[in-house]
Image 1: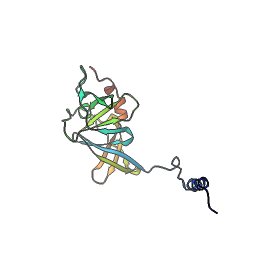
Image 2: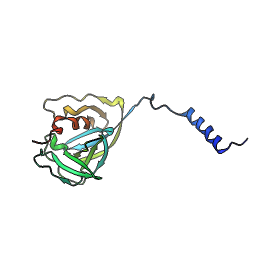
Image 3: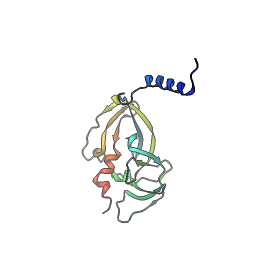
Image 4: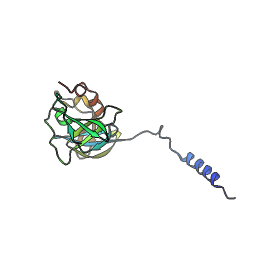
Length: 176
């Protein structure tokens, strides 16, 4: 007996529902992040912290702002605050270059972009690769460090939170 189009779709839907994997109960064993270079440091940023990666837009400087606040740029008609991540961490200004990128933080508002020397690539790690990052006195990254991930080629890479950095008092009060 031949099924009509509607009955065929219902039968197909029933088969797919029995094969469906419930993503809410499935445990995540992989962690995804962006590997970035800021000065001499190679860091990992959770992919969920970044909504997009763009070349640095032309910036309009903000009077009486800290040196690490590069200014504001236009991102599809929205004002994007541009922060030089290397200068923010006290390592001097980032030199403009063809590899330089801006990581747009995944938040509702305000729009904020952290400028990095280079986005090396996207990496996926096993959750079991997590380890602690050793605390060091005077380490400017420590306040925004989430931990570290072991890699075969680089030892361990520090994982930083752009959300923590964006919410920090230092970034929120960029004026003098």
